[in-house]
Image 1 (cartoon, rainbow, N blue to C red):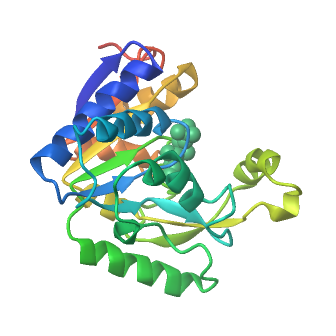
Image 2 (cartoon, rainbow, N blue to C red; image 1 turned 90 degrees about the vertical axis):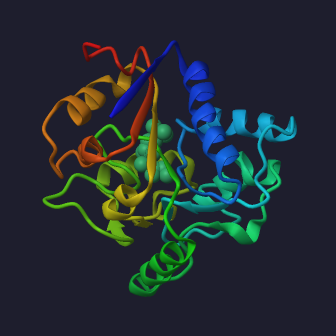
Length: 243
Ligand code: F6R
């Protein structure tokens, strides 16, 4: 595990983009595992700028996203497909046929997960998996549990998550109650894993996940065992650990 300590969110975003750019330069047809959420938005902005400058090229890149809400279509502004299109894909020269997000509109969970696993197997090894971390240590939608889930599965969102998401929807009934997520084994199979974390509210979980015991109760802690895991985090997120 390597830790890169940055001044702030912008610095974190630039440095994370450096790591991704290096992989893309070395392997133009690389497979990138991508995340949504507030943590990677700055990283995506940096990648967009670099692509516009001609420093990186997405034309041969394939992407697989971590997760998607069940029941939200591509035009729903809370869907992760929409997030990816708005925050990255539409601004770079990627072939949309080479981008993959679990199909939130497949109501049969078994079918949706099987189809996504097939996609993951068909694209080959993920060269770099980008991650954020939840306050409870979740990665993707892999929440604290008694075991590490292996491949794509359907999760029931916790009441806390549903309530937290309610502000983004017209009514609470519109809030998705389930999501499809890549499993921990898939994340751990990536050649390189890059996590971005920013802000004092992430300090406790960063200390627990990477300086505490490896346990499925803190899903991100498994990354301590990954042979090429890089955490790029700002001073605030690293404020509870001695480096
Ligand atoms: C996003 C995802 C989540 C987020 C995590 C942190 O695709 O899978 O695990 O990475 O919830 O979210 P932010 O970055 O908004 O703090």
